[in-house]
Image (tube, rainbow, N blue to C red; front, side):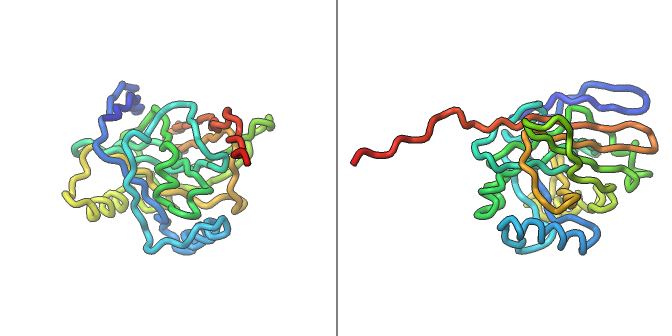
Length: 240
């Protein structure tokens, strides 16, 4: 089982917390604004990804694929991150984190689920107690940026309030209704993402995302390097 060593950051202080998930789910196409959902589907269609069979969608994920590492490895060059808030459920408690559903964009055109399984889900180590942000949830801001190995500056990539995505309660209800045992305990849920600022995917070598709370004046961050495993020479051509 993948044990996550986290820090719960509350106005009263920070405490270490070990979360032991028993299942992980990635949500998709979860926008409250259906026009924004159609916009994201169109972004994907331009990249060769077939429209979803239903909206929203849920994807079961390998528990071994979640990490808080600042470095991930990918087999294909054409991969990219996408910002998502993360819900962690333990008993009656819900924690909120920030993370990225890193995806193999080449594989995505053939099989969306496999494209997500081919790359890790990355999340930051710090999380909030949902109760501390529930009353001003819609004011929280999601922001991401990318940087290539040849660039000095970060390029803004995504930006929107969480009001553009279903609420945590709606996402939890959606997942619970789809679970065979109806039990959310020890579940990690990646929320689904927001549209790209310019509508174009960017496969940079670094990805940064943040969840900003303007009321309590604090933020959660997740930043990681993407390492393409390209250290082997191409296979030699067979002798004639």
